Length: 157
Image (cartoon, rainbow, N blue to C red; front, side, top):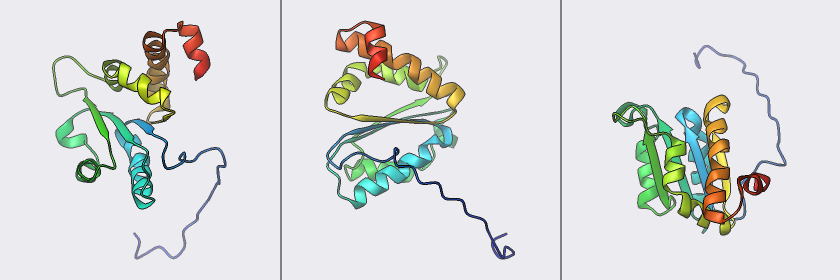
């Protein structure tokens, strides 16, 4: 198709509100499916800038063997210490389904510690599913590990 195309439209929409934090600030990237793609760009940018902030990717998809997108590149980020932590949830790889929100609960104390250190959280994926499930899970984690009520925890978001 590229050889046959003579023109292509391009629409650029700047966003002053969406950006990575300062290079020393940790980030937590939560994504499912192709929602991992923007995080690949985040990691590339932070590597190019030699950012010192730690990066944590929490990724979910159906099967590891066929659905772990960018596996090689993600492993390279891990090996080169640009990805500090990787948590995966491949929900069809075992009898009991494990989802991203399960990984969040499993790592609740660590998640709370990162938030206390000023970490930014980014969520990509199906807005009707992962964003909703994560949004419902985070206040419980904050409440449990931060010693506050769920309503107080909800106000933080």
